Image 1 (cartoon, helix red, strand yellow):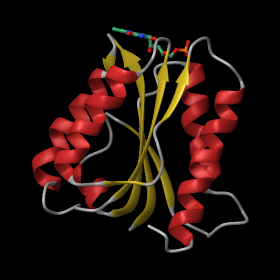
Image 2: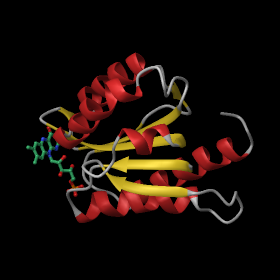
Image 3: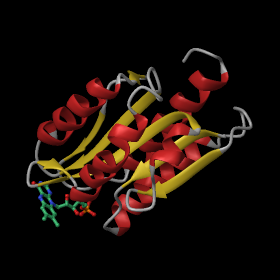
Image 4: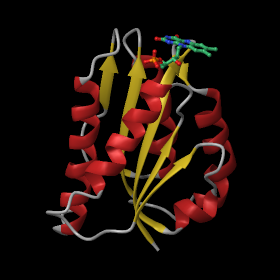
Length: 153
Ligand SMILES: Cc1cc2nc3c(=O)[nH]c(=O)nc-3n(C[C@H](O)[C@H](O)[C@H](O)COP(=O)(O)O)c2cc1C
């Protein structure tokens, strides 16, 4: 069983660093230890989702929507996970040059169908890339880990 599964689309050095920052946050030494795992969207499947206690989804904004590989991930896991992962705690972050709303709402619509429960408001890392995105991603990972460890979720 994985405590925290991070499923991310990371097509660039910046987005890879952001996913790794989330992972680092989940492995903060003041929390846990928790079994945490980072998988690319293409490598993650329904078994991984069915065997985690919480999930973090990370996407880029592509064509004002979620990344194609994140949509492919949801298409592969939706029916196998439906009715098996209800109330799974989740967090979402979006790397967006524009407002990220299309990516955010399209993912939230799918997750509403899956009946997963949000652990925090989605993080939108918006505009030109800034190093503070890494701090925000690490904090997201820490928040998820601390909440899970404390039994809040
Ligand atoms: C097909 C395609 C469509 C994209 N559409 C958008 C978009 O609508 N808005 C946006 O901000 N970035 C868009 N991008 C850029 C990606 O989101 C980009 O890879 C991501 O923001 C990471 O950029 P960075 O490493 O420069 O931070 C698109 C990329 C591709 C390949």
